[in-house]
Length: 149
Image 1 (cartoon, one colour):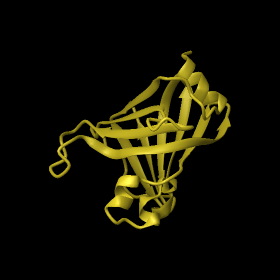
Image 2 (cartoon, rainbow, N blue to C red):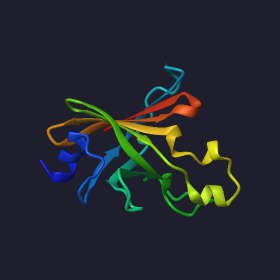
Image 3 (cartoon, rainbow, N blue to C red):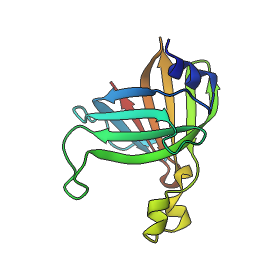
């Protein structure tokens, strides 16, 4: 098992340099605990989890859309980079939650609530040193999206 994945499983918020990548081709959306979408086969996304790109503690989590370039943003970023820390681990499940604020959003006049990273979190299911499933939680909207292979 690589050192970066060991760091996640150990609950360390001081990870070594490295990344964990998870590619998904299906997801299911839940709102208020209810399945509101069914399977979304062929929706290709990539999660990249890396050591904090700002140099602080924790991780940076970014999600990319492999189905094309966004017409307004002109890139394939589905979820902008979010600073996250591990909040809990249990055997092969690792939970991370956002912390801090998006300084760019604040500079553009966003409220503290809208610029807060703590509205986001992910839960990783890790088996045999590989991420098998990711759940993205958007706490402020009571939405969870489970990403599957």
